[in-house]
Length: 90
Image 1 (tube, rainbow, N blue to C red):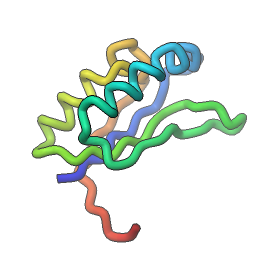
Image 2 (tube, rainbow, N blue to C red; image 1 turned 90 degrees about the vertical axis):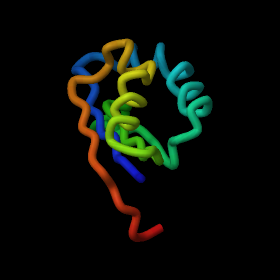
Image 3 (cartoon, rainbow, N blue to C red; image 1 turned 60 degrees about the horizontal axis):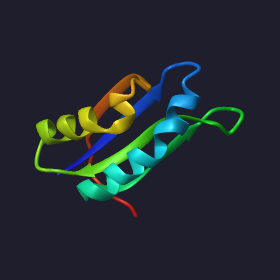
C-alpha cells in the first residue's frame, strides 16, 4: 500500500537538513520502500520540507519508517503528515 509522507521543516533548520542529508539518503536506499521522493522548495529555491512516497504494508509501517528517518531523529521537522495515497497517473 502506498503512503505519502509530507513534512515541513522547522524555520531556520536548513543546516540540519544539509548535515543529515547523506544519512537520510542512505536510509532510503537501505530500507527499499521509497518509490519516489524529493524536497519541497521555498521561494529562494532552498529545501524546506519533503514528499516521500512509501510502499509499505500499512499505516503503522509508514509511521515506523518516518520515525526512524535520520531527518526526524535529528529534529528537522515542524510537522509530519502521513496519508494513504493511490497512484492514478504516471
